[in-house]
Image (cartoon, rainbow, N blue to C red):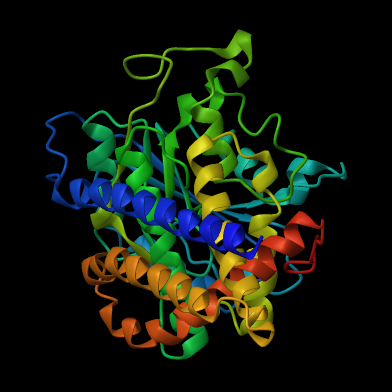
Length: 385
């Protein structure tokens, strides 16, 4: 029995390694592709910022967005989601401020962020929608990078999101984890079926959003305004039949670009407990994904982490002590091979000094979050479930 379990664990490691190498090949093709080159007219853009109690972050974000060098027409829309602080009063002239309460008019809602984004999208005629978060920073050329991809024919643009600063182990762990998300995002986008998106840097044609019925069908879920919407874009059978309209060259699949040069930064959450809550919230929506690649990748990573944890727990029983080393070292090595070029590409290689410790913690953290999600545990995030 023990031998059979050991063999199964090693087979999972081999499969995980093969998957990572396959993704690495796709990542390399992404970073080698030339920047979009198009003489087409630049699209008009609405950049949306839903926020709730973000007084600390709004001034810096607004300043970075107002400093964008984009000349094609940029509308900045901030949506106040029932804030109890004075953040809305700190917004400068030149931005549009909406209040979600005006849109809801007392109606109950579960997915506040989706409702806020829907409100803003219905309030603009811009060709392209970009979403971001209040705790982000946008260098001056980022909107132009995204717009160039749309001018070249993209319908969806996935932009990198980086964690900064990575000045402690907890923060560096988040930076490494986010880099792994970017690795999978870019790889699956290159393979033609993007699996992940991050609402801090997510762009799509407004026409496409309307074609799929917006968040209809996923608006009962409090999170997932990015990934679940992305999956709807690639599931034409989920589109409302009366709203199927031509998008770019065809209805499906949309043309997707991962623009590595359009990275924005976001602040790490404060401490391990907050990180646990955030990741458990993310994991809680996994059962609603409509992407086989993402489900496979998550199941594979969780299975390998579970094998490492179970093997470690079995050490006092003297059950295959070498198995722990083989599984851990194998995963740590292949993850290092994949993460190193990502961190170099985004200028975060200094965070790699924390990688040895992070590689020890990661299987236990992932196993704990995954197990809690499978058992149905939920947490509050920013005062809401």
